[in-house]
Length: 216
Ligand SMILES: [Zn+2]
Image (tube, rainbow, N blue to C red; front, side, top):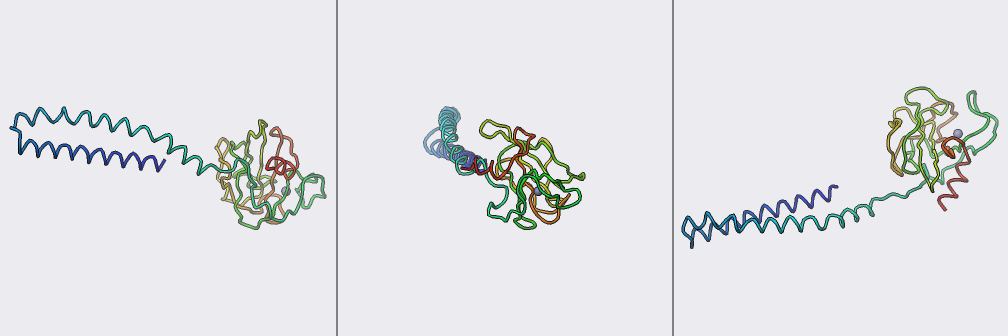
């Protein structure tokens, strides 16, 4: 939008310059060659068609500019929440609960990109769950609902730092949007991102399998 506004501003300036130039020319002509009564009647008839043609041409290039802007800024529709090369400290599935309050069936995958690493939304969607500021085993977390390949999917991100996650239910999130920082809030034994994929919005499935299948 900044580019569009800029173009409009430039055009407005040019238009004003043109009006001033026309007026100045008319004054010169009137002052030198025409009697006073002829100057008063000639000026409006000359200026009107000039404004008309400028207004029409200004509208034409806008769709081209907005299309260029879109192609430059569009993010990948699906991406990893943190660097996929990060160590993985715990995979999906049954496990021995690593702490009091930790579950014995791990409903996500734990990435260890380091304390304070930025967590990104994997795709565009709508926030459907967050504990902020109440307590949850997932700590400071957010869940985002997406429609991907025609299916409803919820992605969830847990244990983020206090104060780093500012989303609330109903917020619109775009693909790749920073949503918080890796922390160790809730039932957690160290800084990591707990990442879930819930098929149909409710059934946790292995996030690594799902992500690899959809990222190609
Ligand atoms: Zn976990």
